[in-house]
Image (tube, rainbow, N blue to C red; front, side, top):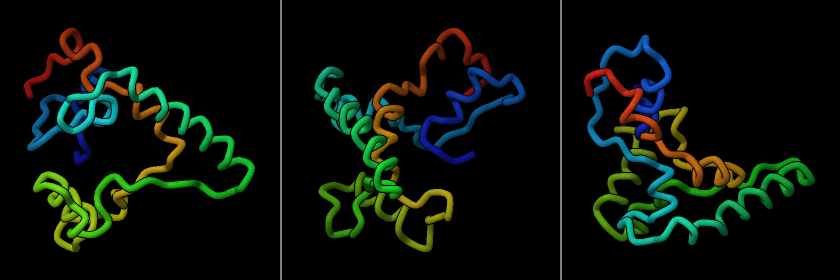
Length: 129
């Protein structure tokens, strides 16, 4: 299964998953809270929770969903190799996939900021990884 660290998180809840293999499991919640370099305090992400709440209200009143990119939209916009690879993953025929469009709804910020892919993993993730 593809998708950040969602598989390890799912395995903490689903015993049918017998083993986990991953190349690079990104904890998207931690990344949004603490930044890509892990230099931001969690409390400093509070405005994102507010933005997510505001987007929910706006989405309902406008009937349209505001979106945010999860990766640079153009290769030249990538400030480093990690984000260049994110651009390649989401926006080139080599890797892109219809269910991974490279953007998320702005209203998702509430869930993303408070999400921790490894919450309780030290207790419930018993499968080999």
